[in-house]
Amino acid sequence: MEINFEVKYVVPATEFIRSIDRKAAKKLLFNVSKAQQVRDPAIFKKLAGADIWEFRAMAEGMQYRLFAFWVKEDNVFVIYTHGIFKKRQKTPVKEIEKAEKLRRKYFEL
Image 1 (cartoon, rainbow, N blue to C red):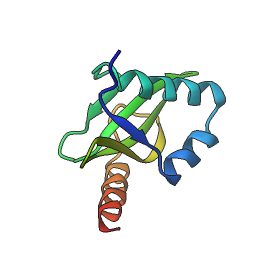
Image 2 (spheres, rainbow, N blue to C red):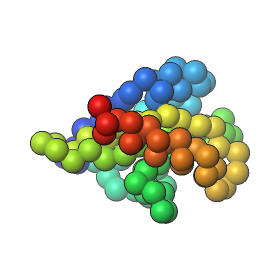
Image 3 (cartoon, helix red, strand yellow):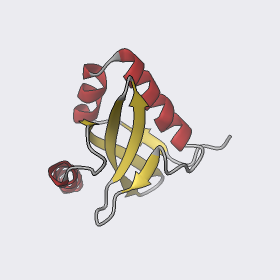
């Protein structure tokens, strides 16, 4: 299958992935890889009212999320900002704000 975008992980995201259960990390990384090939809102969707996207995985009864944003230059890259364990259905506003802040910081560099 064709890969629709490149993926670049930054430090907050890699730290999060290393900190979670190995099975959950594998599932999350598998879903990221799958999202590169297939548009599936169950594993990859844009958050309403923000320039942030969310990669999703469910493992061991926990919901895991990695936040990302698009960089459209020579190629389309998705840059991960950070991740969370999600206990409620709605994504916490403070986490979206944190992702937006990291996105702005990236573009300032």
